[in-house]
Length: 148
Image (cartoon, rainbow, N blue to C red; front, top):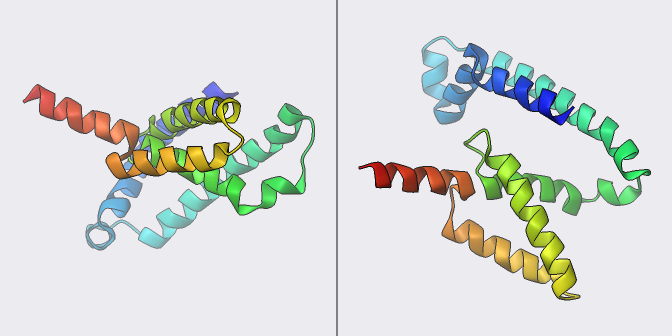
């Protein structure tokens, strides 16, 4: 099911609709000036985002066997946002890579110390300071420099 969602998102991102959203992200005023209806595109993007979030939420309970009020607190949703920032939110594969790296670091840190959250936070803040474009954004920048 994950693969189906990734393929569907890939199609959306690379469609004219996705390109319009990228134009809005880069320069909202210019996008509006060239005829993109910014409010309409934002609402549609919000609806699509809600649909994918709903699918993720519907799959959460069967995957974990139960749901608890803990998932309603800010650390859980903040962790999801951090995955995108860590991997690089300007690339398609960035959040996926961010999730893999974050879960690896989290698994390692939990076994390393009882203060794993502090250690993980320090490592992640350091990574964000060193690579503000995220992992994939930094790799893309390095690749561009290497090709010159």
